[in-house]
Amino acid sequence: MYLREKSFWGAFEIIRFRDAAGGNGFSLSPQRGACLLDLQLGGRQVLDGYADAEELKSLDWGKSALLAPFPNRLQDGRYQVGGEEYQFPLNDAERGNALHGFVLDKPFAIEKIAEEADRVSIELSYLYSGDLPYYPFPFTLRVGYTLRGPADFEIFMEMENTGEREIPAGMGWHPYFVPGAELDRAELQLPDADKIEVDERMIPTGEESPFLGFRNPRPIAGASFDTGFRLAGVREAFLRSGDLRLCYWQDRQFPFLQVFIPPARQSIALEPMTCNIDAFHNGEGLQMLRPGAKLAGRAGIRRL
Image 1 (cartoon, rainbow, N blue to C red):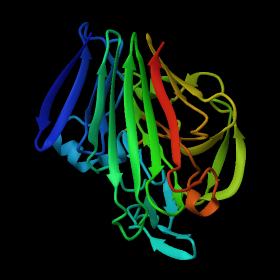
Image 2 (cartoon, rainbow, N blue to C red):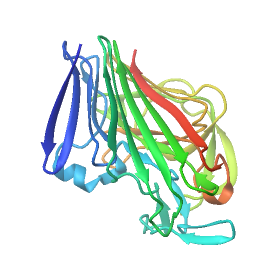
Image 3 (cartoon, one colour):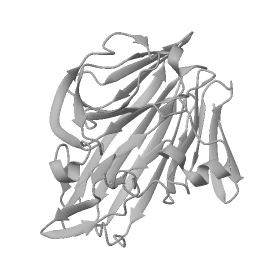
Image 4 (cartoon, rainbow, N blue to C red):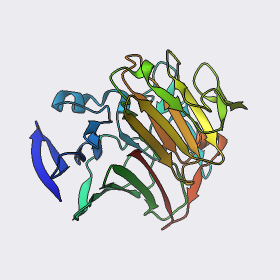
């Protein structure tokens, strides 16, 4: 049986779910981009989230952010649709790019909560009216979080075109996982993939190369990642530290993966993406959604 609690961090409502035994649970902030704040699997915290209202307000590093209408970077923040040019704000100012779309701080409405003996889920939605000049295309973004016993967590994302013309669409999720007390002592295993080569602005050059460096489990031990990958077959990655073993997965609707270790080296981001970096320009994985069409995908993590 799962227990539900509601509290507040300042102005932000927090919803918490915990099983009666205390081994599994998660919390989120609907008003702050439906952001996931913590995730416990089998009695262990596996998510690097925000700890209080000030951290949540800052949204530093985009922890567990939902990314739409594009993930990752958009070169110069500029793109064209139907012969018209649009300009996103450059929130990656150091490199002169737009980063991660614009929904990460938007309020989501709770649509449904389902609580069962060994499963709990919550569904939320954000209705965008098309009022921003740099993306004047209405859409609805839906997200569902599901936790099922004994230690299995899943996210579902769906973007629906609610306007009257075709729109460019991409999605992603930006979770940071904590495999143990010291990240560098943890082991990482990544699926066979092609590494997306990027320039000094972190924009793809058009070249890719096979990446086999973590084909077998090996200690992270100082490895540096801010790297995009194109996945072809298996879409699973593994993290292990002591008795904690995690399997991260993403379905075929997420054919791209970004791996990132922030400077503090306390966690590692495994980010599913429906499209490539700078997809509004290179078109790789980009969906042009017709009116009423949807883009959807699932990802998750489970304790083994």
